[in-house]
Amino acid sequence: MELVEILGYAGALLIGLVLGLIGGGGSILTVPILVYALSLNPVIGTAYSLFIVGATSLVGAVKNLMKGMVDIKTAIIFAIPAFIAVYLTRAFLIPAIPDELFQIGDFLVTKNLAIMLFFAIIMLLASVSMIRDKRKETDEETKITYNYPLIIIEGIVVGTITGIVGAGGGFLIIPALVLLAKLPMKKAVATSLLIIAIKSLIGFIGDVQNLDIDWPFLLSFTGISVIGIFVGIWLNKFIDGKKLKKAFGWFVLLMGIYIIYKELANQ
Image (cartoon, rainbow, N blue to C red):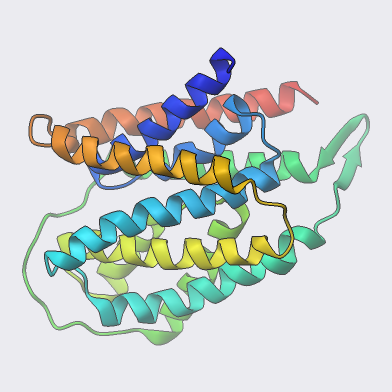
């Protein structure tokens, strides 16, 4: 096993560690690790990321369910349009995108380049969300109301983004749960993990019919990430996850800039 591959599997542990320590955000590292450290094609990388993100989020969601922190009705209402969108994106939209999109002079924009640049933009948006992190921690119980038209639009947008880049989209889902369903922040964070788990795993089902899945690799990588979650939860007793979140946000920002540079420099 080469050093890069060892670093890739170490990255799997890091994904889980971040999720266990700060409650989210680790999934944004999955695609860069799979594509750059383990040399997977971006289409395969985003597909595998959906499974890894879905499985790791499910572990967190089950933990939150046992604590009674998840609003199941809200999760289902938000998840339905999202998982329809993510399934259709993976099953039909991604395979329909041509390998070569367009050319400007000598600069050829390929499908893989477009996916990675779009992913980098999502990373930049997620990093800003982590760095600013102006969430008000409140446990006040307010009457939960549903703005169905906006929920459907939000679900379609988040589902499509998840389908394209293979990331959970918690930085989009959590504000929507707070603003559109009036959930308290802690309950919104807990509920978002269940939504991410459902839509990511259903999105992956859309890939199974189009791609040859390397199950031994995928299950071992996911298993290491799940171990990382439990290590992260244990470390959370000694480390303040909130302080780490801003530092991680800066790291994600630099990663996003690096991906844009690397992809454009290779053209």
